[in-house]
Length: 96
Length: 96
Length: 96
Length: 96
Image 1 (cartoon, rainbow over the protein chains, first blue to last red):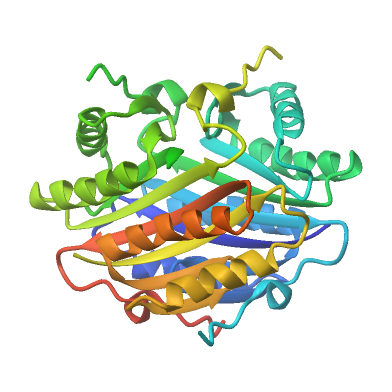
Image 2 (image 1 turned 180 degrees about the horizontal axis):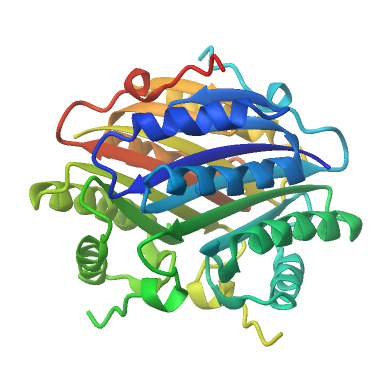
C-alpha cells in the first residue's frame, strides 16, 4: 500500500542542537526506495507504507546504537484508495 | 525494542462523526499484546516497537477494506535505553 | 469558541528526564478555567480556544524564563459547530 | 517572542478532498506578517508566537463561518532563547 508521511525525530537529552541526529535520520531515510523531501519541521516521505514503518523502527534502533538515550518521533501517515498518495499531489503553492 | 506510543486515526470524507472507525481502531489495537489506554485525543499504547508499527499498517488496511477512502494517522513513538518505557512511567497526575 | 486540545511540550537540551518541566506545564494549565486531563502522551484540555492558545504562549514564556533553552510543543486542537466539543464526548472506552 | 511552527488543518466531514479549505488556510496565513512555506504535510510558519497562535484561532473561526463543521488542527511550535528560531535555520538538505 502506497503512503505519504512526515517524520520528525526529537532526541531528548542529547543537547540543545539535534542537527547531527536529524541529518543521520535523513540519510537513513534517503537510503530507502522513497521520495524524501526535508523541510523545517520534519521530513516528508513517499513510498510503501510497510517500508516507511520499517524505516522508522530502523531510525530508532540506529540512533540508540549511536548514543541517543531517549527518542520521541512524530509520524504523520496518509493512505487513500481513490488515488495514489503522492507528495506532489498534496503540496500547495503559497502565492498569496 | 519496547516502546510507548499514541495513535490518532482521522478518516477524511467519512462524515462528521468518526466514532465508528475510532472504535474499530481501538478494537484492532486491543487484539494485540499491548497495554492500551484510550483518551480524548487518541489511544496510548505500550508494547514492542515493531508490533506497534505493524498494527498501524493493519489499521490502515482494515479501515480501507471496510470503506474508508482516505486516512491520516498521527503516531507519537517513544523509545529509550536508560529504562523500559511504560505508560505508567510517563503519566502525571494533575491534582491542581 | 469552545475547543478541546492536547498539548505535549518537549524541552530539548534539558536532560533525559523532563518530568519537572512537564509537571510545571500541567500546573500552569490547571490554573486556567479548563478541564485538564493528563495522560502518558500529553495533556488534554477543554476550554475556550483563545484561552487555550494564550496558555500555550504562557507555557513557552514561563519555561524559558525558568531556564529551558529550546521548546517544541505539539498542540492538537478541535472545534466544531454541530455540538460543543468536550473531552468526555471524545473519549472511548477500550473494553476489548 | 519569535517562533517557528507547522500547521496542518484537517476538516472532518467536508468530503475526501480538502484542497479548497487548505488553500484558504494558506491564504489566511499569508495575509499575516509571517514567512510561510507550504509543503506536502502542512505549512511552516516563522513569526511572532502570539500572532501565530492568533492566526490559528482565526483559521478555525473563518473555516467554520465558511461551512466547515468540524476541524482538527495539528500545530508544532518551536521557541528558543539561545538564538532566533528561523525556518532557514531548521531546514536540512537531503543530498543523500
